[in-house]
Length: 427
Image (tube, rainbow, N blue to C red; front, side):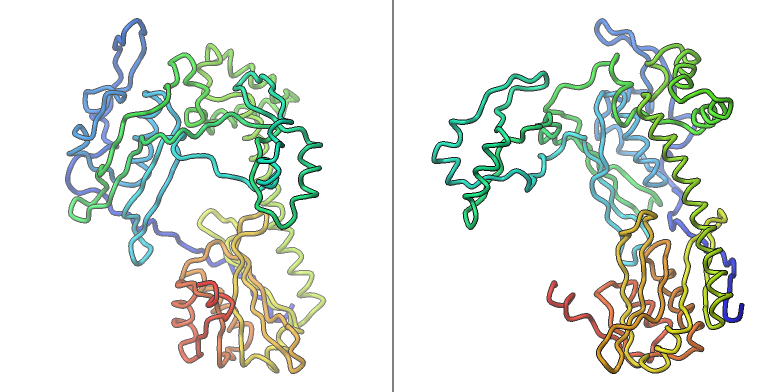
């Protein structure tokens, strides 16, 4: 098994966040309390923040509040949305120039904006104006009343619409509109002096009805299958109790469906997610076993991988004997490119490519990475040079990725770095 290095170098990830030195902290125990309050005829239990109910908070109430991290700010807005009666969505995220510290985070109401216009089931504008609207049939739906176009009308119109301007008709399976241009949002910015994040914008007005208290357990942001719940369900499944019966047991244990915190569909999705994790871990071990088998068959095969702090597979680089022979002959020019998480594992695939004397494509090596940061690119470039006996290329062609450019400057400072003409044309 010559040439294979199955090391277990651990990669440490630093969050780069600073703890708050001054100001109030959201995570302190004296900041949150639970009390009973009356709101009209509703008798509900409200979560308090600084002695004030979440649903009554304004921007002035957060003037002296400093969040230690972005996660604390997101958790605060989550509690506020549950108390108010709406779902939230993470919207914008801004980093500093070094891509180390998050300097701005914005969260909005789930009904912010408008629905994106799709490209399916389009008909030409001329046919619509010529009388296609006359063939629309009104159908009453439970959610809303909309006009629906027959599929036969859509097919007939598509045959005569080539070369004409296309418009989108009303879909035959229209969904209820969930976006209503709501302006409610919450934004935090990083303050270096305070050592944390402060609320820079906090809009509380909504242009749509809010969810009533009896229905808030069905809101998307209020449904979460916790670790102890999934552990209990897995224990019941081991004794041949199905997921549906396990959910009914949790409902009985909590005292009703409104106290469980999730629906049965959420539980099914979480169980499937846990099963996928087991399959992925098995796939990682299978890939390492496959690399060992390749090393037995090919004496010049080379493989190097690393694991994270939890012992899971992080990065993996490999190349065979033919790739080494091709690099020794045609390795003066190296094309270094990565695809953005197009596989089921969500890992970027890096391919080292060159060209032979017949202008044919030859592959020098491949790698699966955990992310696309400068540290990860340093690791894969170092592994590539180690597999090629430290033979460095004369020129390297990449895209416009900044982390990739810095990694090349660290590992291959003598190489001439050029940008791909296709990516230059896309700028």
